[in-house]
Every structure is written in C-alpha cells, then in structure tokens.
Length: 172
Image 1: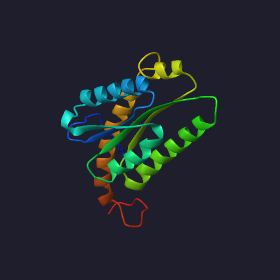
Image 2 (image 1 turned 90 degrees about the vertical axis):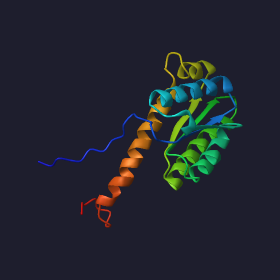
Image 3 (image 1 turned 30 degrees about the vertical axis):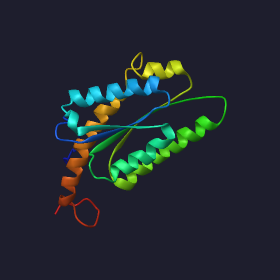
C-alpha cells in the first residue's frame, strides 16, 4: 500500500516575517480585522519587530502594495485587509473582481503567499459580523492562515530539492 508523504504547515509564527496591507476605506471594519490579524500573529509567536503594517487608500490599491512588498524578499507571508460594501452601481463588482485578481497575481508572480482578507459584503451589518461579532474575526483567521502558509512555504522550498528535474515528483 502506498504511504503518501504529508506536508502541511504549522501554527508557530516564530522566526517568520509578515507584512499586512490594510485599506483605510471602511476603516471602521478594516481596523478591527487588522487587530484580529495582529492578535493571531502574536498568539502564534511572531515578534512585533517581524510584523509590518502598511496602509493604503482603498481595496483597489492592495494588490500593488502587496506586490511591492513581496518583491522585497523581506516577507514570508502577506495579509491583505480590506472591506468593500455593495452600493447602487457596478463599482462594487469592478473593485471586488480586480482586487482579488490583483492579489492572486501578486502571489503567483512572486511566490509569496498573500492571505485574502477582503470582505465583500452586501451590507454594513454583514461586515460587522465578520469583523468580530457573529462570524468571528476574519482578520484573526487570516493571521492563522498566514502563519500556516509561511510554515508550508518554507517546507515546500526545502522539499523541492528531493524531487527530480522532470517535475514528475519522483524522489532522487
């Protein structure tokens, strides 16, 4: 019987560097998400000196800032925090779509994980619920995910040496 190798991340943030990019727009929500993310990183053992917080005007600016941070090589994982509330125009759809697309491209282009903590809600009440009330704090969840992805990325970088150059996943 085949015994597959299991590779997963842990929840110790000690020794990793994290960047958090936060939208100022809807700051009533994003600051709560930021507090949750920082709390998760602290509980996971990340040192204050290893966590940088960068503010941008809105969610649409998150991808550019995330990519600029990622290419510095200083961070193991980034967290992008924003909140977009549906309005009466199609603006919501464009901002949500391009923000998520841009953050995905930032992580794919750089290899640095970017945790997506951009709330896309129909109402302010939904956002409040996800920033610390009924739905928990999605920022805290993103912080835990950031630690796990930092751990996993480190393990995957190390394990790539044990695979063949053919990309087939055969061990040497």
